[in-house]
Amino acid sequence: MQLSPLSQQDDARFAPKRGDHGGLMSQHYDLAVIGAGPAGAAAAITGARGGARVLVVDQAPYGRDKVCGDGLTPRAVAALADLDIPLDDAHLIDGLRMIAGKRIRELAWPAGGRFPGHGAVWPRKRLDAALIDAAAAAGAEIRWDTAGEPILDADGRAIGLRAGGETVHADLVVAATGAPGKVARMLGAERVADEPFGLAIRAYVESPRHLDKHLEACLTLTDETGISVPGYGWMFPAGDGTVNIGVGALSTMKSFKQLNLNRLLDSYRALVADSWEVGPYLDRPRAWRLPMSTTKRHGPGWVAIGDAAGLVNPMNGEGIDYGLESGMLAASLFLDDPAMAPERYDVEIGERFDRFLRTGRRFAFLIGHPWILRSGLRVAVGTDAIAKITLQVMGNLVDSSTPGAAGRVLGLADRGLAVADPVLRRTRAAA
Image (tube, rainbow, N blue to C red; front, side, top):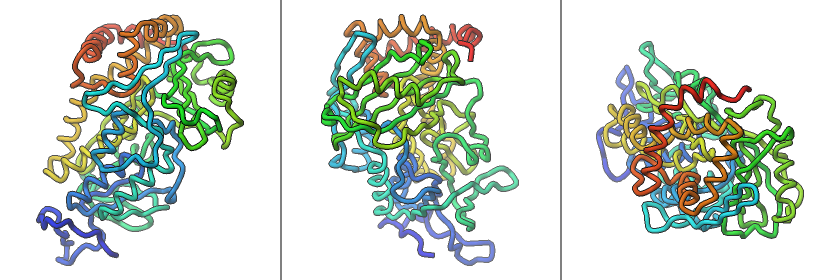
């Protein structure tokens, strides 16, 4: 089998490894990535460009359509720029339109900070292809229609993959498998049972407003019984004649197990039918799960990135930007110090995101109470100052290093919700 070539730097750390009998292992890689979505592709691009031998396996065929909202925050746009992925094929977005009942507030993405003043809508079929093509161009080997699962030694260390009936040895196994499944169970990286998660559903419709420059989020959803849904409905214009229409809900709502996503989507479509002049669904609506926690995101010889690491904003269900950042970080740390990469990755991801994501999960329990949700939405959209903070939260622009009012509000919310968390969990809305 042909291995991916090293970069111009002949780094001994990434030289071919020898087997037990002194011969070269034909199936040895520095990084073995399970999953070819944005997180896995970002790790592969960074690793391959840095001179590592990289293998990516994905059980789907090339060009698969990953179910998603397709929205890219300014944070995601910044990450794509770091990866040198041009946005020529994407529809650029100037800001967010938030709707809460009869209140409508349209705000531009903040400019002049760490992130650009624009986002984008880029259907995942095309985004994922652009990313994985860049990984292949950098020298990563990509195997499609190939399921991968980690191989663990007697001490529980990940030492490679079983992929397509073959054994692949690797110094670091990268789980980029999305929502928890078999790989997560094998690594002990499953969702924390008592923490919130989300469900979402989307379809595509034709609309004359496909070139609209704002994402639209309706924050006041109700199910067919009139119960307020902690989540939102969205219209994400793709600029290609279509709009991505969808709804999402958090598991903290009353009667979550009885929630019918198809009916919720139909109800939301009826709500926006006139204002967006939408046509019928162009495809069958498809649903997916949004993981928002994990029991652990690293171990000996492996790391989990993106959704597989629970890196999804509980307040908007967005995780592409976190997937790109975590993939780049994992590979960069491996290139710097392979032995310490898993531990350093866990620490740095924690410092960057843990406080915000923890606050978001606690907030999910808070808004699971319908009367709190309704009152909170009036505040969130009702004043310009609070709406701007809501914009930053919805745009994944807040983390541990965020300055200004949004950063201060995050700190206050984290401390306040920490005190309220036990009560919120005990009094959570009945399922």
